[in-house]
Image 1 (tube, rainbow, N blue to C red):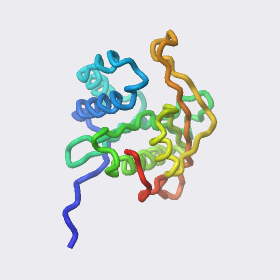
Image 2 (image 1 turned 135 degrees about the vertical axis):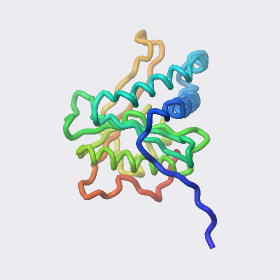
Image 3 (image 1 turned 90 degrees about the vertical axis):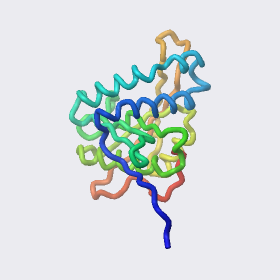
Image 4 (image 1 turned 135 degrees about the horizontal axis):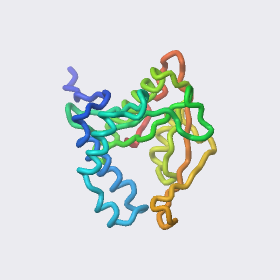
Length: 197
């Protein structure tokens, strides 16, 4: 006899999800950027301001192909992702999509949410008629890079430096990964793969 299974899923975000998305984002950022951003900057991030930005983005997306997905454990948001048309200068906006945000709550990592969310991103991008996808990650996000590599993503050689204040005082180095989105509907993710999320 098998035991009960958790009620986990991924769905498109609703406007009411804004506060939950903001909470996950802030908790993840405070952990992920602890060694990158000054502590006072991380402490000053306001949940209400983040929630308001997500509320606006969910109520009035910039493009019909801007989609926010949430990973759920029952009704609790444990992660989220944002899929959009790729905006890089070398991108073809008709065929290149991007995962612009991919965040799992620190307390929910390695529970399968990352794999489910990544698969939902691939399915969403494919349904929006993209044939390729990219994601930008900090060069220090080794666990996420390895997780994506196990799911068929690979660095394409592109790198950039984000200047967070515009004065060079705080910068984040990023690399770009890419993958093909199969037209036959096959998963872009190995569902049995080990994940950091």
